[in-house]
Structures are given as structure tokens and as C-alpha cells.
Image (cartoon, rainbow, N blue to C red; front, side, top):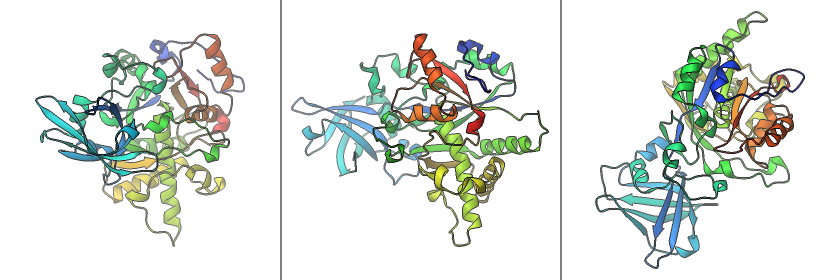
Length: 397
């Protein structure tokens, strides 16, 4: 736990005592995405095994949910293990009551393939097919085969929106009992959706951060929740000094990236509305690009958080949308100025990752003492490891 102030204060707690370190009236924001069984193993007649790892649907689908509900066939961007062994023809898996899933190469992408999947059970959606024949894609650093309990263990208790290839693992610490304890202190919860892509495992290999290409991921946020956030910041702007609106704590880096992306979408709407030569923003060009937070407009011209969220709410209402469905490619690194969150609950991340860049940003560069403490006290790192609550450094606001 990192406390706001001029000195670093690190304290041990268990998650069962989380209510003791969160102020009453805190709002916890969770990512309710659900990991799909995205790894498929096809055996050729020769006996060689081809692995197909489903990353995201083709661009012809407006969102992941639409593609997951497809019947009979679907186009999906995939990685292929053993691609050199699959030169031509189709691959098949037999499953269930003598049903067949067929995979055919459709086209080659930059660093992956577009695969056409077809199945002969007309009542099944693609999500149901994956559930029947796929395997949970554990992170590569697990370095072990999938175990039977991973199917349940590698999901949060609130996972509902199918589409991720990795779990938002900060949420794995939360149980119904913990939620009850938090609720008794008036600590509330809300949900957003960011479907985690395989790019979350992509290391930062570039010598300079600006040379790293961030992965784009689907986000899905209810309009009513964005209105709640807007009202919170309007209240915060109107309160007297010493009075606080809700503290907003993101549970996981994916929730944080989603929340901060909402501000930049609102800022883009304001920028487009103020530019007479700019065409009105549509759903297709709302997506947050990697460098938008650093290049959209000068820092001294950026709108307030309340104004940005109000512009986003107005746009959604004008377009009669109950949900915001778009993509975000936002990269959060040291020098970023946070607009929405007050804190982050997250696990401990590995070096040379964009996740550690985000931690460095929220601590204003003071992440090393936290990680040194974790190392010296035998904390467990990564997906099934321990976690921390980091309060936003005031100079990163």
C-alpha cells in the first residue's frame, strides 16, 4: 500500500483487511471480462500437432461479443504454433456428439493469421464451441500444462463478458466474503469491460519507449456508469476544500487503462467540436490511439475531467447509446498525468513490461522501494501472486 505524502510508507495487509486501508465511500472499479478457452490443438493425419491461439475477431465484427455469438462460422485473428507444418488444407477437431470444428487459413496478417472456423452444430455459438474444445490460455511464464482447476481458478468470481485471452488477475483476490466486508463500510463496486489481448504479454524490447507499439483492446462501458463518474467529478469540483468526492480505485491495470481512456475519448470529442474543420466523431473513430494522451493537445488546454466526461455522456446520449463500445491503445508511462483514478490495486509485474511502466507512472517513478520490499519479503509475483494497493502520487495528477 502506498500512502499519499512526501515519504514512502509501505505496510503489509491481507486482502481480508482491505476495508481497513480504503476510506469509506471508495468506489472500486473491476474488469468483468471472462477468459475464453482460446487455445485449440489440431492433430494432422501425420500425427503432428498444430496449435491455434485465438487472439481477436476479424475487423468485420463491431465487437467481440458479436463474434463470440456467431453461429456456424466465424473469422478470427490467430497465432499458429507449428505454422510451417500446416502448408495447405484444413484442420479438424471432432467433439461432442460427433460434431466437427474445421479451421482454414483465410489470409496472412502482419504477425498472425486470419482463420476461418466452421462447425456443424448449428445451434452452438463460437463461444460454446471454444468451451467444448478449447484450452484456457495460461500465461507463458507459468511454464506448465493447464490443470483441471485452472478453468475455474483463472477467472474472477464476477467474470461474465467472454473475450479475454488472459485474466485481469488483480481481481482474482476478490471473493464474495470480501465484497460483503467492503460493502459494510460503504465501499462500493462497479464494472467495466476490457478484453485482454495477447499483447499484454508482449515485452518492451525497444531501446526507447516511443518505439514500442502498444496493443489495442476492446472496451465496453455502460453509459450509466460514465454518468456516475461525471457526477462524481462535478461534485468534486463544487465541494469545499477538505471535502472529498468518492475515491476511485481501479482493480487491475486493465480497469485503470479503461477508466483513463474515458477521459481521452471525451477530450477528443471536445477537440472535434471546437474545430470547425473537423468532421463529427463517429463510433469508428472514437478509439484511443497510443499517443493521444501526449499529443492530442497542449497540457494547458486540456479540459477538466468533469468536462471531458460530460462531453462523452452528451455524445452517447445524442447517439442514443446505452454502452460505449470501442478500442483503446493507450500507453501509460512515467510522465503521464492521471485524470480519473486515485489508486490502483494490482499484482507485482515482471521487468520490461508495459504493466511495470504503468506502475512507475502512478508512483511518479517511485516504484523501486515497493518492489524491493516485495522481493525482500518473499512476495509472490505475477498472475497467481500477491498484490498491492498503490495510492496515486499527487505529482502524477
